[in-house]
Amino acid sequence: MTTEGQPEKPEQEKSPDQVSHAKRATMIRRLVMLLVFGVAITLGFFVELPVWDSIAKERVEDVNEEEEQAIRDAMAADHQLTVLNTMVDGNPDSEKLKRILEQLKQEKYHDQVEPVDLHVDRHKNIAEEHEIDLEEFAGRLDFYAGGQKLGTLLGETDAEVVEKTIDRYLAGLIKRYGPNWLPKVDGMTRAGTQATAPRPAPAQPTGVPGMQRTGGTGVPGMSRAKSGESNLKVEPADQPGG
Image 1: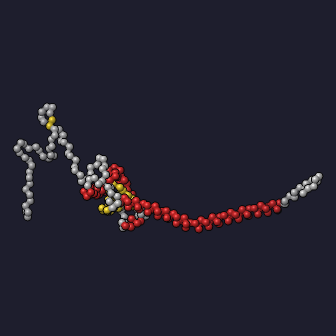
Image 2: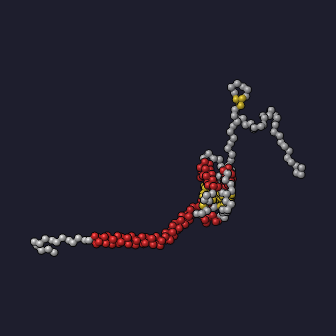
Image 3: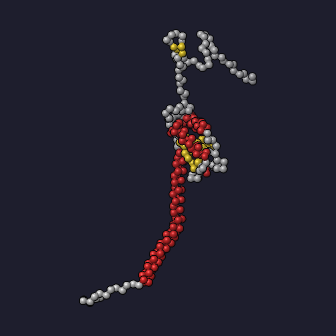
């Protein structure tokens, strides 16, 4: 405190040693704080890691259960043929069957056939029920309709074989439940239904200028017989024991 009329004394300057000591103390405090924060974060990470793993595992299990339920619903669905394609990671046969089924559904069957992927690593419960042999796995399709298993196609990845197998099961479903059990597909004749009426034979010349014969129903390989005659040969039936 200064008295009136007397000049204020200047502050005493710090020596270089005092300045360097203060800087070192400040840096040490900062390093200690950073170290404490680092240790706290590290301990928190390792302590909470099992908790996060447990939460992530529960979420994965919930998703898998939802997917399995969707697969079971498709297996039990009416008015469609459900094709269960067993998917094995890295297996080319299951990937090829997936492409074949998607193409057949898009180009031919539409709502009549529903391909469903069964991943052995995610849908373990359903995979265990089917007793899938992974050692000799070369593609597998399981066919369901209305909750009933119709059959299994093993080791076949030829598109024609898959298509014929689907056609056979569709024909069996129509025969069992009737032609209206499956949804109608425009431009597709249902298997097991009445055949389409044959087209009329093309017009043929009659020998008269400007006139043609129409409406002919000639059978290929059979010539028209003269009036009162017939070229249809009836073979006698085999006699028993002959």
